[in-house]
Image (cartoon, rainbow, N blue to C red; front, side):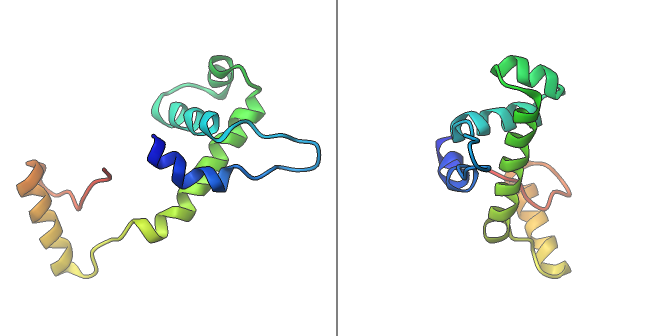
Length: 105
């Protein structure tokens, strides 16, 4: 989580507007991971973290936007069918899962 926080923290730590203080990047990331990893509603997430529903929504939106920005330089897809088949075969050999073009560590 620390590595991910180091990547997204500077992006999500921007002030929203005049007079509005955002919650810490650590808490925003925890909220987003919780929301994306569970079937909870924003109401449940806001109760769990002691924040308003709109704050929970904005935290998830900020983290997802940061991940979107970071995805381009960090995530690469095989180019062409031959390269894709090579990656799929290698991943199958390493993990035992067939037909998978890769995974996120």
